[in-house]
Image (tube, rainbow, N blue to C red; front, side, top):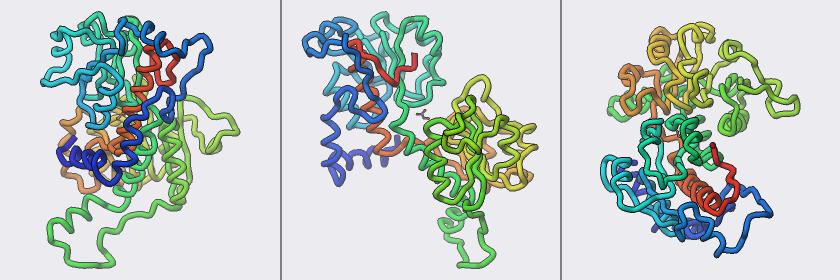
Length: 376
Ligand code: GLV
């Protein structure tokens, strides 16, 4: 987070939206967070004394190692609910291993890879991993499961934020935001002209969504309000009663052929990695806009750059990149690319929701309750 971002968040805590914030800060109750409805099980004891006995390492409160620094208000929530230690140095996992305290849960985010090697090196006391992200492609889930670790993530609470960012990227690409901002900020704008920076309206165009999960659906609803027609492709074909079912396309090639704007909203998996390549882009309509809000490695950068250069892809809106933060340098030089530094969930609402849903998950898990956002 930039310093400016932290300042903004400080304002949330102390300024205009403070009242609302303060209400949320101390209302962290298991199961109350949107998207984290508790699975009730009549066998689970409700008595707080018994919760203590059920805590995984016999601690009065689960001990949490915050391996990634979160926004202040969320860190304070963690500290008020759990026995929490925040990372101080540059190497969080080494710090965790060197600590003389034992921790039940490691909270981290996309900045920390949790592959087999890192999982193997975790202290034996660690029983759960909580990622401050919806994506889990930085975690070896199979290995975590093999090791008996629970893994929690943050679905739902960030979906509106990411969906709004998708619309921002679509509009930014269609309305030539990079060139427009550059023109006015460079103080070289000669004034209004009918020929200047002519882009596209989204209304009347077809949006093809690759990956119609929660986020894809929320983008579809917003895009429909902008007058777009919705098509999509998914792992699972829809039931005929599902919203947008008639827009389902069973092959990605078919989806690309019919789309004016193609939105990538699917997870990065072995099947989807580098799915956007030269062969697929050959099927694109002449003025395709490509938008990626999911993961950078869905796109083969050389293929997209060459399609953007020769006009086969008219523009792109990208929030995510392969090898972040060292992104493919060609994107900086292409005026028809609107790039953002992975800010999909960077809203006050999403960041708070992400903290809340993990706190709920850990609290419920610690007393043996089911957790909706448990990945393995
Ligand atoms: C962000 O990319 C996330 O996975 O939450």
